[in-house]
Image (cartoon, rainbow, N blue to C red; front, side, top):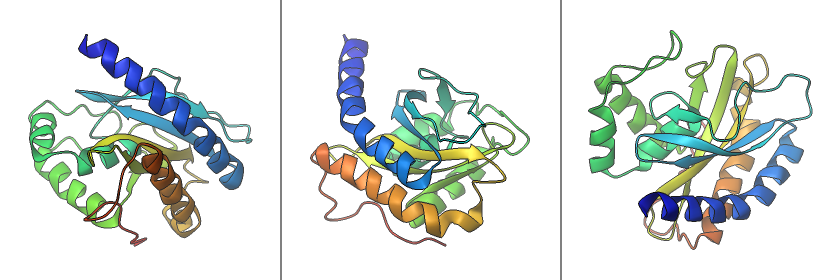
Length: 193
């Protein structure tokens, strides 16, 4: 029953998010991904491929560890301390040489993500792929998904954050609003550093 409820909510969220994700893809001309939170990892619910010739190696349904992908890390950074503790207590899988597998390092990294309001995946999930991710919140102020802008490392750079992040954060906020999220008393900060 829990799985059926999760799939139903995930389907509703995906239907709400797709127009926003497609709009962001068209604006930035980069691949945009919807990651949905799960009990031990996130799952890709939608991919809006950018117009370039290079495609991501991921497919809808693929899972990401909470310690590696931009969307997964942004969700974990805003998750409850109980959920964070459970994830940090698991063996953290290394996907590349840049993946954070030390729980204490990841805990510090999550605080930085929360301070900035976004996560950056610097080839931590896949070599030669970078991504920025922002969480999507439900009406209970719980991070339930993330919007991710991803692409080749030579195009998705830290230096492009001032170009990418305002539109990415707005997209996450717009989807959250459709889930009846009210940002009062916290939420996504707007520090681009």
